[in-house]
Length: 391
Image (cartoon, rainbow, N blue to C red; front, side, top):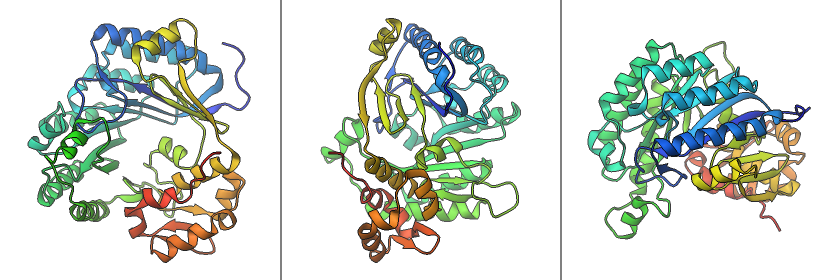
């Protein structure tokens, strides 16, 4: 494996590409697969873990997908055993994304005993008709049963993932979903507007005129989200993310904010393993091949399973960092951005800051800059103004 890196990467992402069935809105790389494919993936992943281990000393670990919880317990035992052998356990925050229909007491115990301390439940909606509309395999009862199971197993940091502006979703149904989700008492809440990504069934339905997009309704639903989360004791710390805070205020980092994602938003390095996973270290971005069979074959032959690589210029890297960090409600303190990127926002993005401030999207003062409540609603458009295309 070689000697350990003197400047190790502190964040590890693992992409598990399997789902019970493909959701109509999902553009992430995933596939429906049988047990044989999962076994082969597990063996390949443990090899990739071995190759990456010398560069890693993870403080945050995130297993995303796909549906990581769909892996059988036997495969989890192999993965966790390999991480133990390689010295990759003990992360301060370790998240696994779960579908409520694929969590068992045996898997939960396996995760807990290995040190997993944060689980994210892909709830999406509490309405049975909308769950079916989205292609989800779980029911609303599965949400309550799984949440109770995880609490009994001792998990004290749970996230609920919701979606709004789903085709056919009324404002009253959305408010009801929010009410029920908040009543569960999770430590974290994530909620995203449905996006019509190309190469998804939902996009095809939109193109065919089978569904309409109501932007005004989506804006109203976002306002409902922000208001309900605040009333429920959550603090908004990012456009779509809300966390509880246990401890004395004020706090720069909320106690239950997702630290792994904070590293992304602050321009930190991370290593991604598994098919389709991205790595970003020292301004170099690589992406693994989005084909599980080919990924496994390349790893088995000893080759790096990479199909894309780019090295950003210092200004291009700083522009991306600025864009990602603007998603946080705290925005960018001037001094912190300069420490992280080596550039001064007030110098290199003076025009963009002025234009966005005039639009009412951005607020700048002596301490730094941040998006206004209006700007948070259009965060993606605001962030694009800070990007610097590579030559």
